[in-house]
Amino acid sequence: MRITKEQALEWIDGKLALFKVLLEKPCKQGVYDEEFRKALGTTQDMLNHLYEGKGDEFNAKILNAGVVYTKVSRVSLLDENRTREKRLRIAITHLEGIKERIERYWEIDAARSTTSKKPVPFVSKSFADEDKAVNEYFEGILVALSIHFLTGEEYSSESIPQKVESEIDKADLLIAIVTRRDKKENDHYTVPPWITREVFFAKGRDMDFIILMEDGVEELAGLRGEKELIYFTRTDLKKMQQATLKFLEALRVHNLV
Figure 1: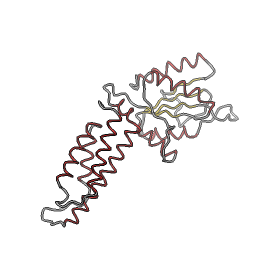
Figure 2: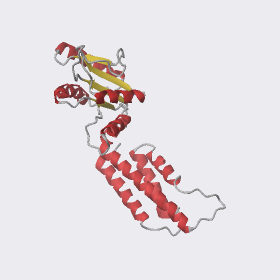
Figure 3: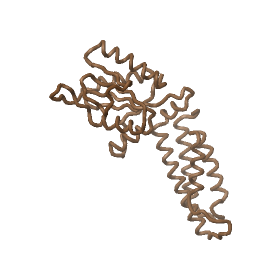
Figure 4: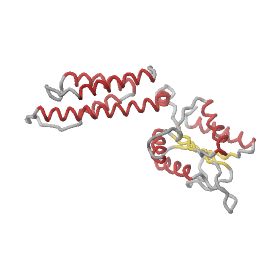
């Protein structure tokens, strides 16, 4: 992407304003009036510039909306205006979705579009205060390596499970920082339930993963023995160094560095 986020939003706002004006102007010539046709064409070009293939997808969605008539059908102007209005409303809704994507994910989409084509991971983690230092340690490695990543921290109007699953769907792989929760009678520790949920969700999507697992935690989602399990002990410097080296190796394997 060669333009800035502010320029992209300005483009989108301009097209939204155009389609809203057209929506207020009933067409006298039918669905394919010149203003509507020109708006579709320029918007297709703009979206293809912002995101490869998005403009073609937009145009196909708009033109496939409404009623399809045969060559011998005579359609009233009222029917044509109804079809046109439906298409305009779909266009506005679609552009509003693109605008939200730009506002939330412009930097991440830009990272994906670079020549390196780096994958974007989702980081699954505990939000407990006692785990903050561990999370910051491993996330700090990602930041130092200029690896853009998603988390479930950003505010959203969606429910927590929906929001997190939506974020995971946007990612290319999952990195889970699995920390201890409650101690059990066998001296093992439970795992924060939402981390288990997120790992299961990623597995259900056949997503690659890297699991950073604190020593002493119990079995997680049937992953014991998986090659991408990296064990760490937060109070043992040597083990943290070993875990760091293995983490860096896993990042290279997944083309993140």
